[in-house]
Length: 162
Image (spheres, rainbow, N blue to C red):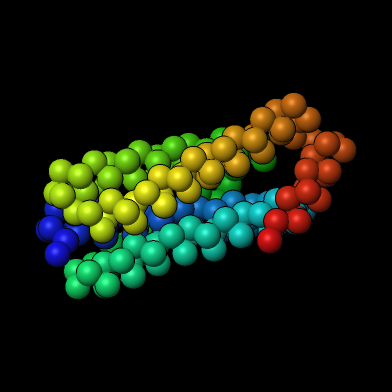
């Protein structure tokens, strides 16, 4: 049985994952508006992944007989200063989600909820991957600049994401 405290935090995490999906979708729209289709494609894939994360939490709660309480999601920004600013915000968002996952795990330990701990291990590993991936792209953007040939090469590279 999921405790009331952990149930509330897991419902909040569904909201945060959906907020992230919506943020990445908004970033995709921005990338399309400046004709960076590869970046847009990458962002759309990231949005889908965040939605899948929300659904993992949703399914986990249902599988445990806990209540799912869908909270309203936040409106994401629609304008960004540059492609670098997009990835800086993406990294900041991933770092925020990492902190939330760590707090969930801490709570699962305190509540002695072993199934939640096992499920959250996957998310802890996933967040390391997420932060690393965004950091690599941001570092490459800083090296190559957010204009010119390097940007177009990155756009092509990011279009290859499945």
